[in-house]
Amino acid sequence: MDFTYTFYQNLISQLQDGGYTISDYHSYGKFDKVAILRHDVDMSIDKALKMAQMEHDIGAHSTYFFLISTDFYNIASKSSVSKISRIHDLGHEIGLHFDEVKYGNISNLGGGITILTQ
Image (cartoon, rainbow, N blue to C red):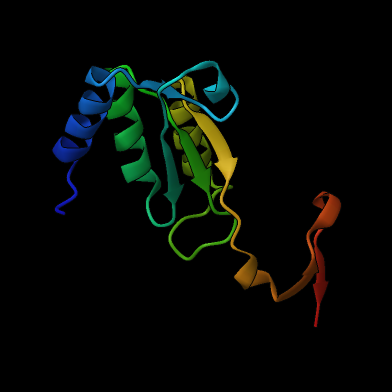
């Protein structure tokens, strides 16, 4: 499969034409036929923003998950904060893309608390 923006737009159109509702993680239970769109932003906030604008233009929304620690972008930089805010302003949700491998041997994820061991 050759993934392009055009291919993705066509996929969303086919879902919508097929009677699927594009939903978020909070509302999907309200629909019989539902698709949840999500993106793990591993490398490029610029490409995520381009995707978010395209989705907005065709009436779709999704959730964008950003890494806290990556060699490809700094989530706390002024530029990144601005772009992530723009993605949110376009109607998309923002989430954390957590890569537990980067933080050593994790012994417990219960109760929302992460315990790191050596």
